[in-house]
Length: 138
Image (tube, rainbow, N blue to C red; front, side):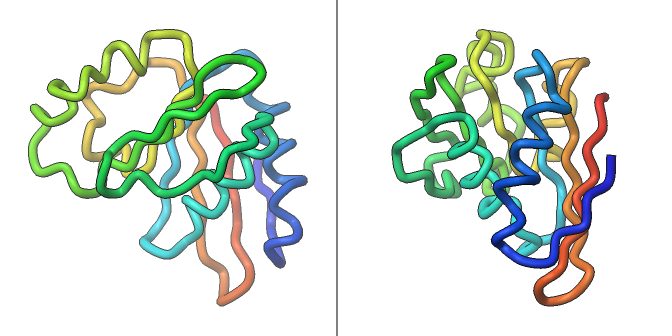
């Protein structure tokens, strides 16, 4: 599924479309260049999931946890990990296979640990304000 976005005001509708597309899937990976808008979109998606807390990038903590009406949501940013052992030390299995919703930025850094069934979100920069979102089930 491809969706072109022309402004930040379009993101809530895209977040709802992602939620509808995902169905019962709980693991989401987000791919895109630095500055493509992954964290910005995840903040909007968290709002669509009913998270009232302020959502921020877990760049330094690697994972942030939020409560939603449907259970825990874990937001990962693996950009800064230097070795896959850091994901093991974090206890990735409890997160990825524990039943909560997982939102994963920079998934290529932990690719071998990802579950088989997940939703892939690719964000391509078209220009300064426009993005192309591509959703797929993997």
